[in-house]
Image 1 (cartoon, helix red, strand yellow):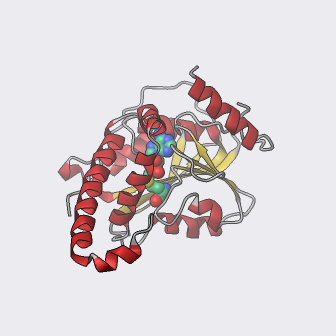
Image 2 (cartoon, helix red, strand yellow; image 1 turned 90 degrees about the horizontal axis):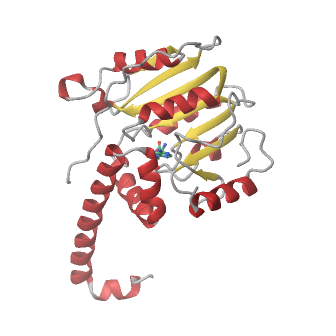
Image 3 (cartoon, protein in one colour; image 1 turned 30 degrees about the horizontal axis):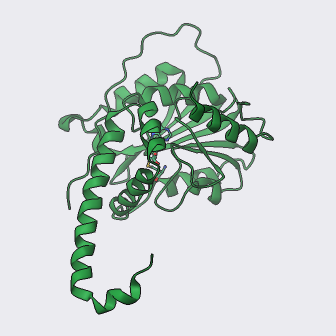
Length: 268
Ligand code: SAH
């Protein structure tokens, strides 16, 4: 194991020692007004460059594995902030943020439910779910700028098996190996626990290279979940609700996972 991984593990162990669910292991503003024309031109150029950079990182995240994405950001964590600045500017056009729909649902559930938020850095802040509900929440993402966020590849989380009541993937099934994130959620969820997935609608448009939502749902059911609800009512995203079957599946058969079309943003 690399020194970087060891360091990561030591930090995680230190920070989350107490948790049974965690496995051991320059402001230029005054000058701006005087230089109105050139700075607005420069700002436009900067915005264009960072928009291009955002689209490049976004495409990378949808076309590599979670492990590769983790390495990519750990080599250059500032790219993560750049990605999130671009993501925020794209998402702010959405009439509704799926994470808010999920928070509303969570607030109706038992406050004793333990939640895992897989891919937790949202446009409304890091670990937004953790900050919005009374429940105990484990917030995971590739990079942590907040002491409450666990930095990891979510295919390989530090959470203890069968310790979680609700696993949330809100627009975070980005890697080419997305099925391994769902397998990880199956591992950490208690029998009867909930799996909530919000994904961009265009990824599920079979007439446009997207996956058939039924095939996606069937593959998850074969993993050992029961589909309880699908919500297509929102313009931009679909919400899938599953529960982990009480009875464990003994023999694992080969599951056919549909490819989820990458969500690439156009230049605006
Ligand atoms: N859930 C948030 C964030 C969506 S953006 C919201 O609703 O707005 C998707 C997030 O998933 C990004 O922060 C990205 O870093 C994270 N992510 C993608 N692949 C990941 C992986 N393999 N492991 C951990 N986090 C991942």
